[in-house]
Image (cartoon, rainbow, N blue to C red; front, top):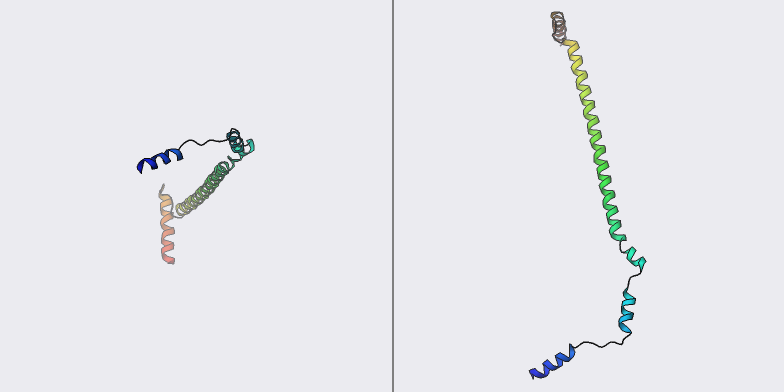
Length: 114
């Protein structure tokens, strides 16, 4: 019984015979046209463009935020310098005895008011 199954198996796995025109029709029907070859690049190209747009958009947003932070830091630095200059004017910079005496008078006047 094993020999009959093996013989039938050999017959079922033998090469198929096609009419001589069928392989030519098959290759002509599946050969992509030049337009179809160009269209196959559209999805990857669209993906690359979308990724590039997202990258540029993210970079511009972060650059604008960094520029805003720097402008705020410069504004804070200018405010700090202005306050330091006001304190130096009020209390003197202690470079001479006259400025130190004037600073003491201002300090005593402020202490008396509080």
